[in-house]
Amino acid sequence: MTTPDDDALTPQSYDWRLLRRLLGYLRPHLPAVAAAFALIVVQAGVDLVGPYLTKIAIDRHIARGDAAGLARVASLYLLALAAAFVVRFLQNYILQMTGQRIMQDMRREIFSHLQRLHVGHFDRNPVGRLMTRVTTDVDAVNELFTSGVVTVFGDLFTLVGIMAVMVTLDGRLALVTFAVIPLFFALTNWFRKGARQSFRETRKWVARINAFLQENLSGMSVVQLFRREERNREAFAGINRKHYHANMQAIFYYAVFYPVIELLAALAMALILVYGGGRVLAGGLTLGVLVAFIQYSERFWRPISDLSEKFNILQAAMAASERIFGLLDTEALVVSPARPAHPAGVSGRVGFESVWFSYSGSPKAPPEESWVLRDIDFTVEPGRSVALVGATGAGKTSIISLLMRFYDVQRGRVTLDGVDVREWPLPRLRSSLALVLQDVHLFSGTIASNVRLGSDIPMERVRAAAEAVHAHRFIERLPRGYDTEVKERGATLSVGQKQLLSFARALAHDPRVLILDEATSSVDTETEQLIQDALRVLLGGRTAIVIAHRLSTVQNVDEILVLHKGRIRERGTHQELLARRGMYWRLYELQYKDQELPAPGAAQATA
Image 1 (tube, helix red, strand yellow):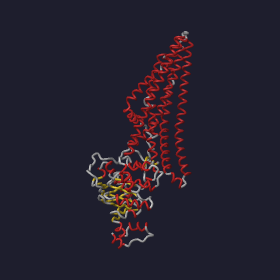
Image 2 (tube, helix red, strand yellow):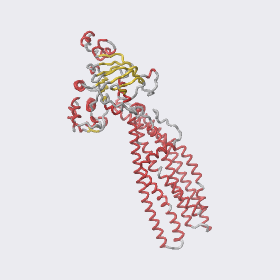
Image 3 (spheres, helix red, strand yellow):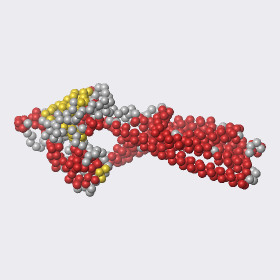
Image 4 (tube, helix red, strand yellow):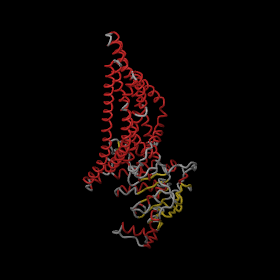
């Protein structure tokens, strides 16, 4: 399971374990991989032809003045170049296509897994960091499949083929050429140790940049209102600086590694010219073999340099895959049971039985001070309504989160129709409930699609729901009515209009239990009165749980529960609670201190 700060990954190397897991994504695409592999083998063979044809041209035709034979060799050389072009094109096309499909599969898997994780995971992990897993980390892994894991075999085949041909042409000159290889392995070992950590650091700071940007761009109005531009600029500059230093560390290893590779190649070339040239002058070696060796030496270091680049790609992919698999290995704590209950219907009876809950996430009893809900016990009969009131932090939203199974309780149980919500199939449980939040989330699309939310709800029901909550009036005034495009998070709509749409969304799905969490807190008095009129009709036959700080919105419910520090302190109707002059009465007095409060006797008589 990932930690809240998943940047703190262990410095151990898990290359082979991670690589085996990454290679599992190739299985659905084995035919394409096999075709690319075959083309790579052909390409490796074609690459060996050119220098050998040069040797033949020099030793057999140029040395003897055979122009006709030289023309034939030149034609074969051009044919080999054309074949190499076709093979490379097909190989690159197939590999890139396969890489895109693997990237598509991986992103689909990550997104599906993100949707299965419980809400608490998103409380602890910034959205920008999770976005990095789906975007830049998957891109890094894609490089492994398109430029690394398969093509590395082509480089190996080319190396083995060149070495075999060079040994066949002249074994002693080949040994001289290979004398610098130990230096290459020493250099690669140094590069490997430093590059991995630099890649990890770079990935970490990319994730933090994304998280910072997402948070501050989403809250730009608050940033500007509180004049935090300069402070945020400094904070971003600090993160950006750390990313710069991590990149510079990686660049340092690159800057040393590749020039030294070129230096080793030049050293090998010098050895060939000194030793081979001396033998040519002594008559122990033909000029054609020497020229072929020079060309093979150039081609020998090219795959070695490519292998080094593949190693860099592998390191980047390992750093990215650690984070991707860390996310995919995060256990989904709230899932449907293996053998779920299947009630025939849903009547809407909600029960909380001695419920204790803490956001610690541990199934064991947390420390006493961390309990958010303590011994919550109440029942809402089908078709009845209950209101939850209390100060901020009293536990009101936590109660509905447990009913929706965003979290699971540590003690007691929450039931729907007498069945523990943990025994319900999650899709059926949540389709029986509708939640209207204070902070309404609208998606890009149309007004109608935001009411439907992907369900096959007919347009007539969408209109009926909008009319019932008085949203139809403002929708009809929009340029295209229900087909009007909604910008990101409903930027072109007022807060009140968005809340009316959320009411229409909930009612269009016809839930058995309707949950309102501060749902009328951001509408004006006139709109609130319209909603109250609609609710009196629409809540008929439905179980309703209402959370509100405005006590005027809960006066007509069947029962009011007053919460304080996670416990139910009072319960009763509006008039009964006023008559007791307890906590509810004090809340009411604070809200309506400028108005005349009813006398206890009058309140009791009214009740």
